[in-house]
Length: 395
Image 1 (cartoon, rainbow, N blue to C red):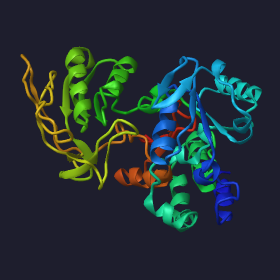
Image 2 (cartoon, rainbow, N blue to C red):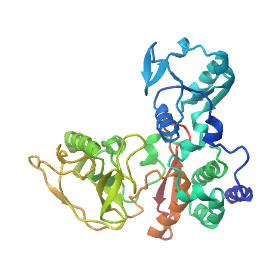
Image 3 (cartoon, helix red, strand yellow):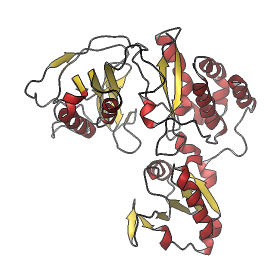
Image 4 (cartoon, one colour):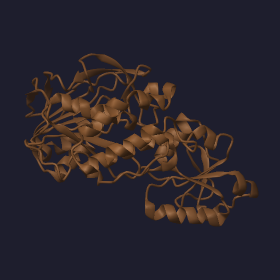
């Protein structure tokens, strides 16, 4: 069934005539943005900052007369009275991922007389904000045709129907440039799926891109106290927050905790790094900072103070590796030695959707004979948020 659905996608040979293109859809049109909650973050970062389309007004019940949001006039929907030209020609973008409110907002906009209404999740570029992989922009649909064999082979490595369904729908979104809703799971199952038993449990937990420790706190909420936690966070100001949070909660989180102000990459070296808080910091050739990377798959050794983890020195230039400034009383050191990842306790974070087919073979290569699970996670952002892949041990 799933292979047949892939065959139908490949039979197209090109994007459909109604494939979404942000330039064709929004160029020269006035925009009205409805909703300024968490989902709106994606509108601001992708539609406004990356593609340069700015609305004339933001509508949200939290705004009052005279308010500004992102430097743009903002008001309550009750106070907005569109003109005849806006009713006929403007595009209203609903920035909400909650189905309960989407219908109400759409009906309200129609009552105002707005004719052209678009859901943010239907903007294809929201699902591939960095236009990755780079070859896709040059080759178009031909990119998928060239990788057809790899895409089909990756499907065979997925272990359950939910994973296959997510995989095919994800590819449908990109091969048709028409976002398709994915089966949803609770957000906490990104790293702690209820139906995948780990042979080694969560005794040792490695968090790549630890932010301020939110995933570690969720680990504690779902699993409880564990033995070892290792946190990687290369962004200076986030590492400082991570260190403070871990320091204040270390006794309840784990017996031993390591915080490393490094990125995770395929080798131990200094890399250019794009620092920012919008769509996430990342390793990039055009980055505005330098970070030290650590290869998680090949292992490493490090002696790091535990519990306190330290603060980043204020005088160190932003983006450069943070340093351990203090050793709290009673702190210890932990050696993280070389260890190949095992499928009993390894997880892969969310990946750019267009690159999903490359992951099952990589996971399979770590331990031949094992497969992968691909589940979609429920978020407050546009509902078609990308899936997370994780290795799964048959035994």
